[in-house]
Image 1 (cartoon, rainbow, N blue to C red):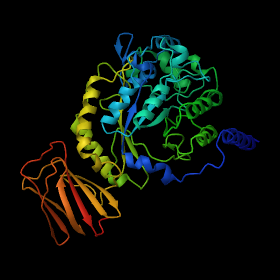
Image 2: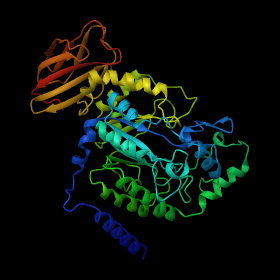
Image 3: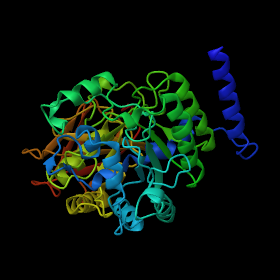
Image 4: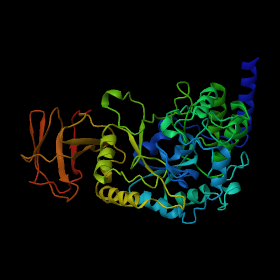
Length: 464
């Protein structure tokens, strides 16, 4: 009986959705949908929401962990968190400036947290009043102007949506985060006992509806709103599969028909809903971990996704640029995060990092965009990316550690080199072939201490 009801529900959902679609719409293959994404290689993640108001501090105490988890880690009661949210007033929000900063940094797409685990929607929603329009003094949809800015600047836009874990909308599941570091009172046994007995919830207000009700009454209609009210949506970035069921995932998956070209990740429900790409978090996979599936590393600039006023532990532009090169050399994408303030500004450290990345990308971006993985794996002196065209193959050798003897050697190389130059200066470099070893002669010092790219064009050969 349950299976019959589920099948009928899915048929009904699909019928409603397809009724909104233009007739005779071409069904794209995965490769067709993924083409722009594989070309892009570099995108911006934006974690923004109510959690930017406390900015890592609750009741005068710094709350450990990442900023957007402060409600969970601090076990903030629903009423208190909702009351604080009324203050959310990002009067300095300038979506055109945000998109321009991403574009200037060489990023090709943006993913923003339309709804994170605190359940707060950055858009007008008829499914829950817990949204920026109905619950804050700001009172305006934050996603519409961003979608319009992305359209103006030629940047793809995607939405992050926490489909299961929700700490305010009743019925949403909650991850078990029981380390005492995050409790308001580290010695409290009341909170400990309650969260243990209530699947990670800490407030009875979170449990006045069932998970199934939450999915049907909040998650499904909100995802429908996101996929119908903001034009073309490039990516639906699910997070997290905490407590998800196949039935719930099927209902959400059916909505993707509203955006036939959309790309999704692997966090709807594992393993039955793999999506289009994997999402290693805060790490770059080793070559041995890769299995041919498309993948995207998401990473913070400092130690948090959502804004924390006292987290100034930022990675250097050199580290992040080399991470991007490393990721591209393994055939992946890099989604680099910014956590705006409650006023709607990027932290100054983030702005400076984006500016420095942009300088490097302006000169060397072609070594990233549209490239595929290195046929040689990793080098101790740097990385390699590759492009194949009808005219031959181009290799981009990014040198991190400049050789003291002024020579690079690449073994198992075949084909004829027709051109070799430094992208930083345009200067030609000499090459020679000894058997199957390519020798590249370099100047005494690196023209770019972050990563000097040598562009080598080749015809023939089987460097795969």
